[in-house]
Amino acid sequence: MLPTDRAAAAARSVSRADRSESRNVACRRNSHVRARIIRHRIARHGPCITIGPNNINDIGGFVAAAREHWGSRFGFIMAAAGSAVGLGNIWKFPYETGANGGGAFLLLYLLFIVVFGASLILAEMVLGRASGRNPVGAFRLLGGGGWPLVGYLGVFTGFVILSFYIVIAGWTVAYMGFMLDGSLISGDAESIGAQFNSFISGGLTPVLLAGLFMAATVAVVLGGIGKGIERASKLLMPMLFVLLLVLIIRSISLPGAGEGLRFFLVPDWSKVNGSTFTSAIGQAFFSLSLGMGALITYGSYLPKTTPMPGSAAIIVGLDTLVAVLAGFMILPAVFAYGLDPAAGPGLTFVTLPVVFSQMPAGSVFGFVFFALLFVAALTSSVSLLEVVVTYLVDETRLTRRKAALGAGLICFALGVPSSLSQGAVDIQILGMDFLSAAASLTDLLLPIGGLCTALFVGWKLGPKALSLVTNDGTQRFALAPVWLFVLRFVAPIGIVYVLISGLF
Image 1 (cartoon, rainbow, N blue to C red):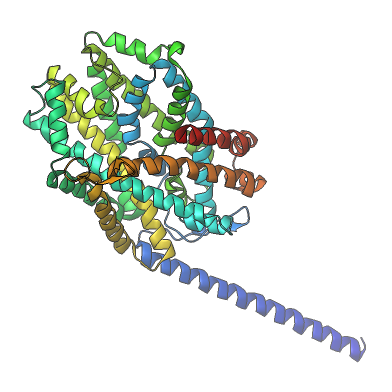
Image 2 (image 1 turned 120 degrees about the horizontal axis):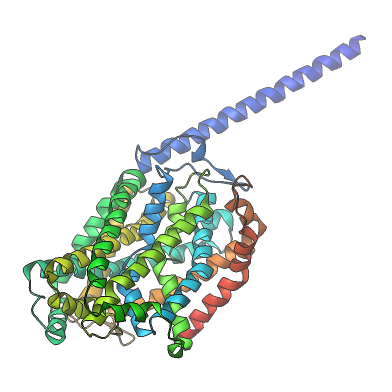
């Protein structure tokens, strides 16, 4: 070899060594960066964070941040189902069914749950897991531009819902006491209705009960994902099903309950009109807690090994099952005592206490019913607060403790006028009391949030969403093209229909 050749070879060897050393330095630097990220996450989320390869997910080209994970798939499903199962299933669904013709409404509701609900729940889970962030951070990472506004909309919507949700949940606490002391067991609909109106307009007591419920919600969220939300959901969700089954057995065993079962299960298409379709779509949307970022938040704690389509199907199935079981629990009892199934929102706090007053051991079953409502409300309120807390922890320097306590306190303060507006103080917005105005606002914001989510996943992510939902093809999802088609065309059309019908 000539001297010049030896010099060139030596130079190439030095160059390769330099590049290798540069790569090693870069790898060490990245490792240090990742270590700092994880240490920072531990400081903010607590020591229960799981450190491992799943903490930094690389799915479909997006890198999700280090994050605490659910301890098990069962824990995630219980928590997510608890988020969806709430007052919308047990309080709202039976009276909507009663007001819209019974069995025909049930079939339409089930149709829209399958068409819209499952697709949008899966879309939110995809956004959460792919980003490992809160709703705002998810849309910022995956979309950029103005898309984070959709995340802000979800956080705001969940916060407003929670502010009046705690008020209604506080009423369930009071009614548990009313059932125990027997004050609702000897009265007709008029006297029980008067007692309900007197209670909600009482001023201080409903406010204190709302505060008590808010404190219970904060206590669960303070425990974090594993030790707080997952542990509570594993206890509360099975309890909810046990209470439901106890009441269903009692309800369908009443003399005359068969008429209620026929009303609920046999469609009467002559009573179906445009408003029936609107109510069924709206109920499907409301009962699944879509459009407020809850499933994005819970999905952000999912490891990449969890199959999402199957989990989404189970969550939708459990949520729908609870709503249907609530119909079996309430409607046969209402018909058995000759009461009006179309009593509207008053069905829970006026009509049903009349049923319990005429039922043997009615005080016991009445207490169980309102305990059931309390459990359902708590699992949903936890998810609503977690959306806000996760946003604050991710986007600011607040610890989970400070975020939970601060958000809980502000939310309670916003709930005070909702409570007082029920008769204690005349607080009106656009001719509605404060609580009704807040509820009407969220009725508009939820579909808008769902519409934006469908458009984002269907069009902005597009084919990339198929990679995200299958973890880069490592998990089977035969209906993936159908899911994307629904998000692109079917869901937006249906949601726009709901929005237009609601406005006009």
